[in-house]
Length: 171
Image (tube, rainbow, N blue to C red; front, side, top):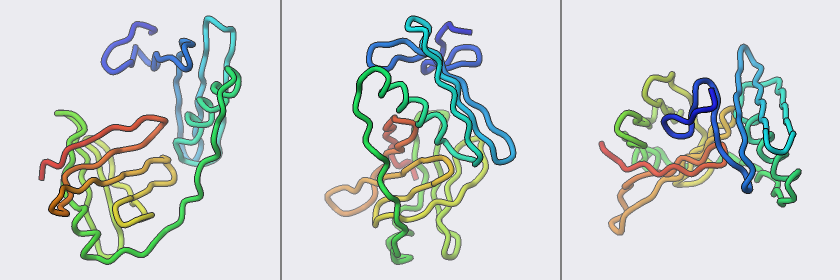
């Protein structure tokens, strides 16, 4: 289980490190509940987080608790506020964005809603929090769009679980 495979994923757990400390993490969720179990095997430390909502919060909270344990400062999460963005500006964000050749994120507007769907996953609603930013609270994911010198959207960065993953616009 602890043999890293593709992108730090073993057989059922993620193998990674935090501030130079190796850790194993596995999360789960069902019907409004999410969990995360992080084990620092060399340090004898285990962090368990249980959450009564569908979100990516347990993993983020678990990693933040690990950071605190190992003496790092943890900043509070910013307050996310929905903003009104014109339909024309939102339409400019619509497209397909490639995080890797087998994982594409589709973004589109449906009436007053902005939606996104990743390869092999269901569609989810995202909330505009800026002219070039969409946020999904349950997954604690932020899409930050980038524009070229001509003002056209060229890509996005997915911020989730402490990682920032750039994606180029492919359509």
